[in-house]
Image 1 (cartoon, rainbow, N blue to C red):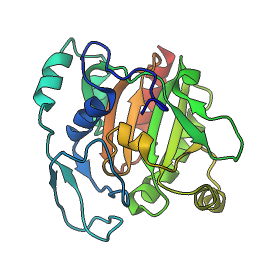
Image 2: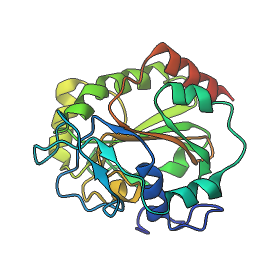
Image 3: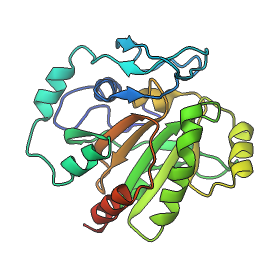
Amino acid sequence: MQRYFKSRRFAGLGLPTAAGLALVAALVLLTGACAPAGATTAAASTGRAGGDGQSTAAGTAETGLAPAKGAPVLLAAAAGERAWYADRLEAQQFYVFPKPVDPGDFEAEALAAGATPAKLSAARGKLVLLNFWATWCPPCRAEMPSIDRLSGLMKDDNFTVMAVSVGEERKVVADFIAAQKYRLPVFLDRSGRLGAAFGARSIPTTYLFDKEGKVIAGIVGSREYDSPELVALLKEMAAK
């Protein structure tokens, strides 16, 4: 875990980073997500609720997470004044954390062989959309074009995307990105450890970070990321 996080605790919450993020992820309504194949995640002990018509690595459906034990404690500890963007993000299907959560710095392996890994701290001063996905996951593939378009629409703003492939080898991901002609920033989590640290028990799982590197919102499941309403909100947030 220390390979990805310098800090092992949420600021002010007294919870281990992996456990805390797993609890936060368990609070998000999970719709249309895939379960990473063979992944051992920090959220493995949380309950789950099945659904119909959703793909997983094993060909079964997984569309819900029950709140983890201790989640109400996390919410109580994080309670505070509601952020100005909260209602608007919730209208866009995001779960907004009661207050920003600091996971510390982390890094993701670059898609290009030999390139320097990306660090969250290098994006300080920008909003960051961290998306955990995989090439075999239908909901991930469905939302990827909109994330790519969002990345292009926000290229002149204080905003960046980190699209992190979970549990896949470089060639598989590189071939997929090249075939689809995507231009968004893509990274690798070949071991699945980074996704596990963020409680990405199912994919796609997406987090939004503020300019200080704190997690402010999350969503589990597929959605369109380039709607005019969401783009306008992200531009407003990036300009503040």
